[in-house]
Length: 453
Image 1: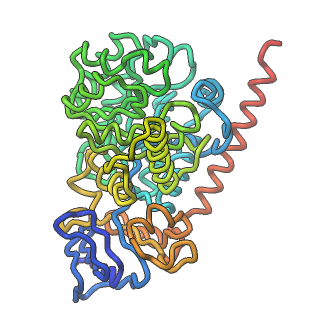
Image 2 (image 1 turned 90 degrees about the vertical axis):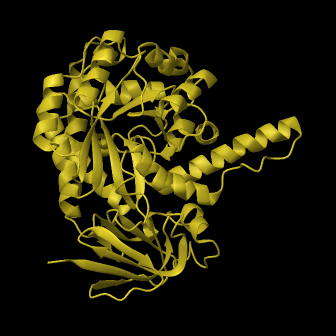
């Protein structure tokens, strides 16, 4: 039996150039698929009245360490160097599979609440074989669309991040692939989260890239985050190892050289920028325009809720403000007018939706309100005091709205938020993540008490 949902009379921003914007439009969903986007649709369907709402594709977060939800806000003033010590060398070794499950469930529900319908979960917390199973189950139970990127363990900073000789265990990656991701057509898909050159010896880098390609897994890697990582020349090293390819997403990219930008573009690679983290923790200027100038389609990501908010509105404004501030300052210094290529509010919506789907390797199924794609849809309440009155609907989303305005969220046609309230068992997720927080803090305190004076 066909299930139909009709989102009626919203201001539709489709992000599909063939459809464009409909100041008053309908979106018909059939069995989880977008069937039609038109000014008016008549259908036997459950009707969601979108009057006074802006209807957009769901946001796509292309890089988040979702497991860190139980330790939200523990490192508000951290630099990147602090993060390695305070999080990866202090909390990460203490994580149980139960903590990972709680983090991924609560973190994914946080995404849905904020209108993020697709997530790349950069999961470098696989301290035992039970950890990745727990991570996948947390994502599955949330109902989000996600690419689970299997990463390394984090039981020792010295072992895993300083010229590491420990390869991500291929047997366990194969087990997770066959157990949870036998098909690439599901709501959840799989990738590999690699540490890359500078953090690992060449043999480990080569082995992990080969593993990913043997299993048909897209690769995601942090590069050029801060001057130190920039000096590693990670993309240049990957090029020297013959590993660059269109299956790889490069996260941050703040200190890529001009040569490395060309290498990424020429190889068909993709880019994820985490603007608030990059500005706040010292990674460097978010390179949104640099990516665009090299013919790339940059996406946005949250990174770590230990230090920054977990919503896309924050990232949009951080990227928009930082890029324009940088260009304005350069032009002032050079006594020249600002270029016509300055980022626009409309571009930011594109970057946060369809570009994100492109980077996540899921543009064939999400990122725009295109008939045939899966129904990942968000409605923003444009009658709220911080949004109304609307003059420019895209700007209203990118520069006015916040999480409180996310009224309705569908993933794969399933309604996960309605009338501003999540429909899942949020109370259970909050209880579990709260218990995880308490257990981790107690374990940290106990570990500190046992440390030698």
